[in-house]
Image (cartoon, rainbow, N blue to C red; front, side, top):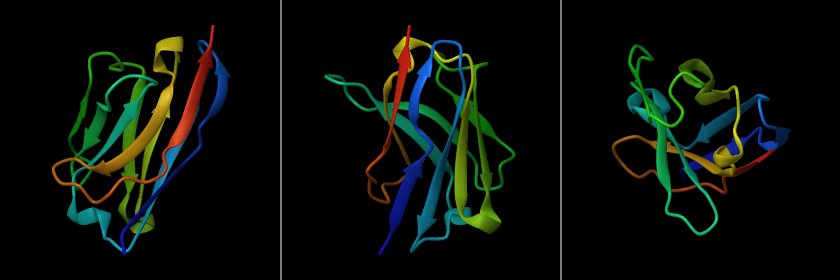
Length: 115
């Protein structure tokens, strides 16, 4: 059974940083490009960033470009999202999933940025 478990969220002031982790079990993430997505209250889930299976290629939504960095450790079956210079509009529940297919959504991790 595939499980994606996100962690690392929390409450932070604007300008602060957080590092999210996505630990996978039941699936070998090195087989997939992986992505981070987020959903704010009352809004649809949106793309944040993705990374190729090797880690050599990354892509970001314009809203986070230059502030967020996606990375992965295939040996640990884990994907990360370093978030710097956080803004109140980054407040959302953050999820990871494969970039091009649906492995199933985890519980997500809540990020709240206060102004």
